[in-house]
Image (cartoon, rainbow, N blue to C red):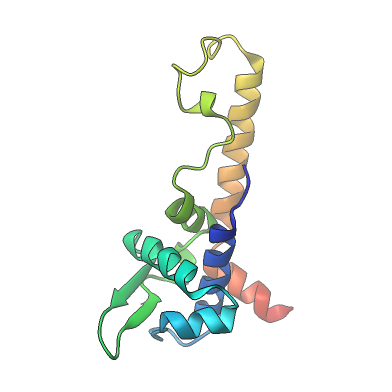
Length: 137
């Protein structure tokens, strides 16, 4: 699995947003400048985060994006899933028709264990934890 630039940007933008007072609304163009993310690319990222209910969006002159839920409940897993879709190390873990050896292959067991550990680790990092860590550095 490779974390794409979109996921990296999403995490960076959300950390930036989380450092501001709760309920702060961010204009896409200002957020793009502050986080050094291309504006049009950030627009797509923010829309995906809003579709996943991580952000809320409001149209209009006073509109923009804001974090929609508690920082403790937003995990890195949630963010990456909102941008990338399902996180999968190997297709055989999720698609038994992909590999006929799925029930007899020890590599399948290994991929499953690694997948489980990766998901657990990604879920252990919340936006609150990342923000606290960022502020400490």
